[in-house]
Length: 255
Image 1 (tube, rainbow, N blue to C red):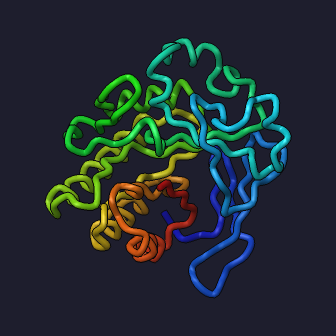
Image 2 (cartoon, rainbow, N blue to C red; image 1 turned 180 degrees about the vertical axis):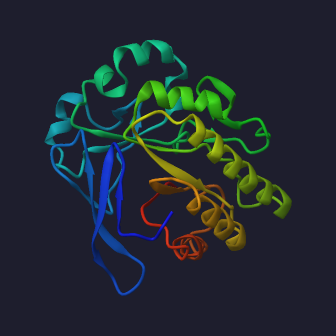
C-alpha cells in the first residue's frame, strides 16, 4: 500500500483534509450508502447483529448525522439464527435491517461477547468465545459471512493473542494473520473495502513487521487489532506509533 492521501474502492472513498505537526490526520470518508460524507477520526457505534445496543432503530435517526452513520458489526453474531444463505438471499445487512443510509464495518471480534481465544486458535483458523460456545473460524468460512452480509468495510481474519504470550507464540500469530490475509483477499467478494489486520501483541518489532507485510498487499485500509488483551494504557501509545510510522494511510482500531 502506498502512502498516498486518498483511497478509492467500489464501496468507499477516503481523502485527507488536514495534517497535524505529528502523524495525526483529519480526513473525510465517502460511502456509497451514506447521503453525506463522514469526518474522521470517527467513532464506530457498537451493535448486536447490526443494531445499536443503546438505542432502538426508530430513534437512530435522532443521533447526530453523519457521525452516527458508521456501525461496527461482528459477523460471528449471525452464527445463531438465520443462515448465511438466507441473509444473502435477503440482500445482506442493509436489506435485512432496513438501515439503507448506514455504513457497516465488519470485524470478527467485539468487546463483550465474541472474544478471541488464543489457546484454541491453530493454523487452520481463529478461535473465539461466543454466545454459541467456543468456535473455530476458518478464512473460507469467514469470507462466506462477509459475502452474505455485504458490509462496506471489513477486516481480515486475525490471530489475536494476549500481552503475556511467549515471543514464539506472538511471532506465530503474525505469520498466521498474514497468511489468512492472503487467503481472505483471494476469496474477497466484489464490493466492500478490505482492511488488513495488524497484530503483534506487545512487541514493537512484530507489530512493525506485520504492518509492513500488510502494506505490501492490495488493501484499502488497516485494522489495528490485539488491544484490550492485557496491555497497559501506558504501552498503547508506543504500540500504535510502531504501526503508524509504517506510513499506513487509513486505520481503525479496536480495544
